[in-house]
Image (tube, rainbow, N blue to C red; front, side, top):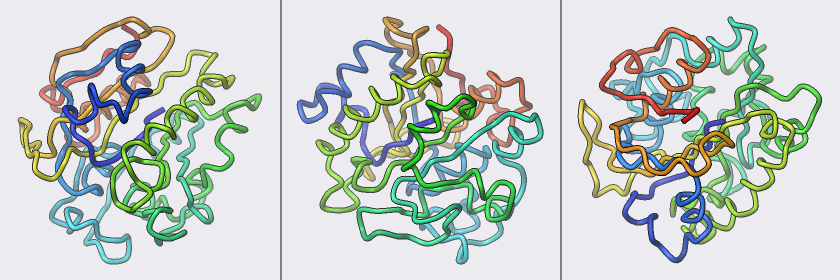
Length: 271
């Protein structure tokens, strides 16, 4: 599972009393201390995370909508999973219906810019559309007899801690994680060897640090699983495409786009 939170720098999160639960996770599971985002704003990072391409030339740095972006084409992680016959689901907080392409539920609700799958034509039609669904059913499905093997989870704006709405505070994001992470860890999916990659899409706007073309700033990434409990810190460089590379490596897929660069790094998912 990739669980995406929003718009906070590593230095703001680590040691912050408003994120006490998150800091308890950071002290208990593998913590990537040199994790960097692809860019600013949200959308290029989300697209990079599933395709290895941020598509900046198509206007994604301005968080364009699926109908207003330029050309966004090619394969993404969902295509790889489907071709391999591996079950997957993308769960979206406050999404009103499957593969919705418009913002919904107000400023704290569903932001389509946080749903990269629907920016690809294949994500807006069946069968992929049926796998990009509201998050309300996620825990039930992860407890089912046949849960999806791979999960992408984008909480609602109120839950993601990114300050994009009055409700979207760091403290509210931490409270959300304090409720949701234990729920996920209690599911059959997690107990059967599930791994949660908890990461942030980008750092604060003022942070443009990074290497190899990355300028989205220093973000926090945690790898939460039974295998990484007590693993401590991981100091090697890893960026947004490196997280995709890590997932593709785990499934034995060829690397898409920037994930093919060794400089993007790779998380030790089973350390």
